[in-house]
Image (cartoon, rainbow, N blue to C red):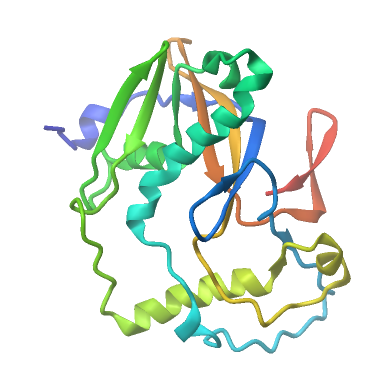
Length: 237
């Protein structure tokens, strides 16, 4: 059992050190993984006076949702990425993950971090130790085997509008994005994703550190708006 009293968890917060990218991969509609940026999307550049005329409901009947059960594959995809990289590190996964103590997907961290402070659907996480690395597997927020789509039609449409707007305002083609062109024919397929692998540290109040490697889905990069990181300009994610 877990006591969710805020009083018990009202303690000095741990800090997440600035993450460093150590890899990336793309996941396709068949859930196969490629260790590359094939599915990376670029934010389309538009002028300040741009007036959009989009029908965000267009294509609703044809779009493909991502079954929440598929989120259980996040750790599997991270491990598949590591397998593709191990040849560069003498088959040493500790080196692949840059000496991380814990490996997981970002969504797993979110579930753990929010639990003491908010309610919601129950979740289950399995921890497995192998070669001095603890892998955290998110078993999903649903009860085992069956996913039932929401019957709230209005809510389903609103969810689609967000996915469709993201699809319209981004492109896999960086040249098309730079020219401000739009492709309205692309079907929204929520299974096609691009993720980055990060290495970071969780710094505890006593200065102890937990070395962490995790994957995080990236919706798009904005190559026209740069941020400065240690004297180096990088695109916003």
